[in-house]
Length: 290
Image 1 (cartoon, helix red, strand yellow):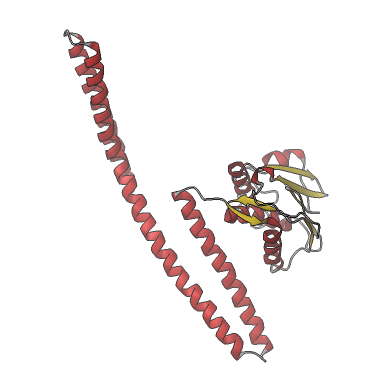
Image 2 (cartoon, helix red, strand yellow):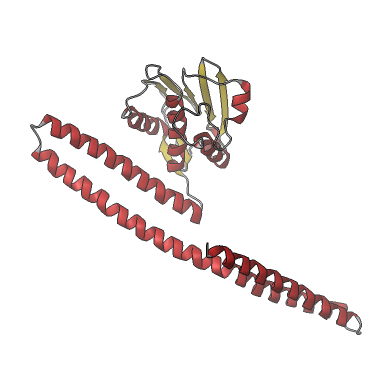
């Protein structure tokens, strides 16, 4: 609550400074117009004054923002460092426990659950770092094998004990923001599982630079397809979720210049097609079917 009056005060002071600077410049301009001052000299004086007032004004406006950003970044880095410590501790102790519980089946099952949760936490940690870095500066592209990435993410999805997957993947390399691509892919796969019965398979096909993900779920009509990328929009409010998954997918696709097409029919399922031709890698790969 204290920040609101402070914000209003800053806006008021900024407005006053801006108005005063304009008045001073206009006054000086009027005075010089009534004299025999050379026009080039007048222009130089006005330009210099405008730059000086602009610099002072911008410094006042942005200095508090830069200070807040710096403090927030330092705080975030400290938190990230602290989070990494217990993750490393859990992993180290899990390995030691695995040796101790060699012949105890129930104990090993529980340990596997802990390890799976640790891996999930580790991934969330990586995504947190990614999100912070993305806000600070553009994320650099990296070359990676898309077939391997898809197989890795499918294995992670199988841990949820939901839908089976049918894969037909060619060996393709692309150049992209890898973690962002993973998040985008995870959102599409999660959505496909969410709106399908558990026994219905989800097919993933990678043919050259066209990636197609198809489910046999509830599907959508034309009106729903138009709204599907809207933030907080959900096809079924009884299903858990915030309705932001496909909005994030569209944002990533726009930034990465990926053309996304959604085909769907009510009661028959949905097909998401991603054209990755603009992410074509410079590293040649032998494209052979699995």
